[in-house]
Image (tube, rainbow, N blue to C red; front, side, top):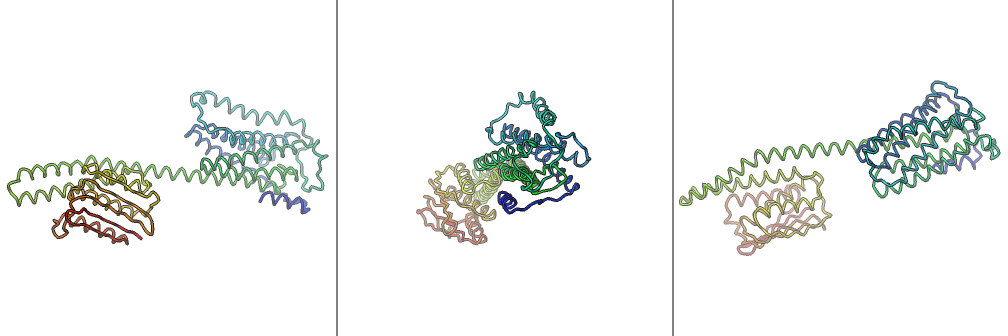
Length: 454
């Protein structure tokens, strides 16, 4: 897009495409200075977290942009400060050249970690060197300048013969090449690492490169006029601002996820230290009562039912603890495997898993299927006395979950209330989620439970 605009302006004979507005010029310089400060602050935060060399150089690049735009462009424009001839043109040009050189370096250095103790001893020296280069180099080179500003807008009035009198304009080509090289390097890094900020920096660098091309063709840099080059330059900083805003949004999302996970773990600890411990005590005591009252058949039956209820409650509390302890975005097949393994390990059954990795369901159906897995595996071992349980998960015309065991099977008419409740609960959960529940069993022939979701 930027190349098309530049080509149209030059080949179409468009001349004097600029607007004289000192106030707009001040606003533009102030905007790019503020955005540079924000971007530098953000990248410095990235460096403090990761201690990566490329982030450090990127911070210095944005800091150089900020200092150059603020001290050499925005403040002089806002306060109507008249720098000596030469310094007014060389200052911003050399400042941007230093900044883009640091940007080029940040795009090409490896993302290795910096030794923080060593860096803490030299960071002030490095910052002083960058500041001295930004302010000292323009002063040294100011003697080459001949005019305070250049205000030509038509290629017809600008030719190669003018370059000896204005070498600072020729440096725009060098700056443009550095921007392009940095942009492609940032794009490659974004593809490899998935770092979205690098993508925005890459796009902005290309726009900044064509801004410098326009400054070379229409040498109106840092005058009281606003031209197409200024628009492209502002676009570069706006792209940086968008990238910074999205980076901050990503940080906020990570912080929110971390806070949710911390709260889930706190709730898991509370359940483990409170409810689960009490239920474990109740389950143990009811088992002792069942043994003591073995000669009283009716009392023993009631105690056994109480013990079974306590065991189910204990299983539910453990399931809640496990669920709260796991990351919220755990892949579904891993969640199914963890649920099945946890129950099978506790009841001493051999488990075989055949789980497709591409199955994803919404949170409500996910919770329903996990509860069915837990209930079915537990029933197969406790009531069916299964030695081997197979859990299968596939994703074809719909989500298909099956739990098959080699246990003794059962006669549905001979089930006690607790066992019937477990089967009824699984069936009702599947139907409520819009699915189909199938049960196949016979005495001595094992059991197959299937759940199919559309």
